[in-house]
Length: 160
Image 1 (spheres, rainbow, N blue to C red):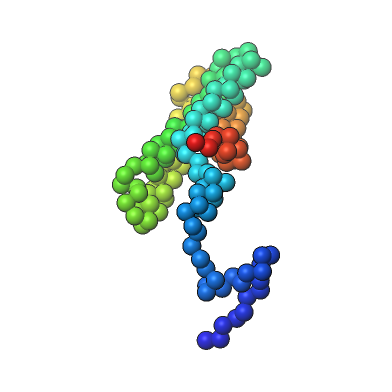
Image 2: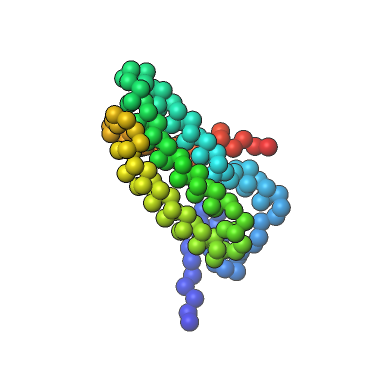
């Protein structure tokens, strides 16, 4: 089989398999500091805080407790499944090897989606005078916290 030559990248190094070299301990440490891992529990905590803020602002602007509770329930429909997902992924059985990690991710993601749908369905009976717009605002804003925390991961995960 003929080998196709690869173009050099910006540094002038070829991207071929012969030019691979492992990182030194110092280089690996520097890379870890530049791109810290983000704890899934910090994301859940940020979602709880944002959910409380959304509920408080809803109460402040509408003056109705039912609207604030609807917004809080929308946030809970994100936070509770996310916390269960985080617990499932961080269990010892989910991290035995890469195969169990992939299976656990898929399993807990399905559980998270199912629980979210069930909580939204149950909102009709659990929240008196349900305000669908307020609940959806709480749900969407709390769900979008993933992106905010990821963008600001250095703020949420300070260097030790």
